[in-house]
Length: 344
Image (cartoon, one colour):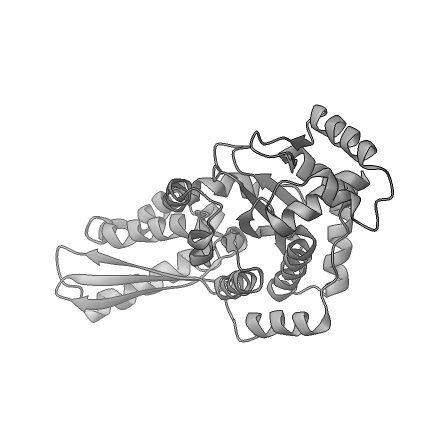
């Protein structure tokens, strides 16, 4: 285990295959070169190391990296100066859930020099707080939908006739009476149909606006994968550029994989799944919570030889920070809930 840890540490540092001579020179390894070579051969046979044909050294495999992360690695504590830098990047002026996640992802990309990824499904727990109709031109209207988590969505609708001020006021009042306080999860086609029936004779003429309400609620419920620091992804010479371009064009496919992840730190290596197929890469993520419920994921995409000792504590810290900012609970309550989930 000591030799495997040393090989992974050295490979992360240099990016080059590690030979027995380099290991024998380390102060923390006191066995002979012959013992080191035999151990390396055994680790290779067991699938923890690979042996590039052009080199006498070994490199860790996915299996070797995972064993190292799970059993051998000692996370590096974040020092006070770095914590202050992260908090400064995160800021405290974000007032909506989306702004909080965006700030956290941007901070994570900046501090790790990797691409930061995030999903946000806190909208699933929010309710409609306001619906408004705003005229923008001849027979053109903007439907505005606002939810309790601060999300604002709008959609332009074309009508067959111009609405009078009285019609707009009546329709807006009707929508707010029937939709305010409704959870987005309950905004089904069946519910919209009931609202349409209550609208009565107005339904045929105002159906574009009512249909827009349903479409906006669907958009708010739809999880998406946001990537910050894309330049870091494009600048990494260890990634095949074709893989990066394909990922950026199909990143939404990651949503299901991220949202189904277990509590704690989750690690996926490139080529381990169809959803995430950037060769020689790793995706490290953690869930964040809102009022004790999973509300999304935050993490990074970096090279396989990512400095996990530093990056994992950053992700853990930011996921806890985001949970506190999104929730009404105290930090102690959130940490207790996370501990309970991990224990289970």
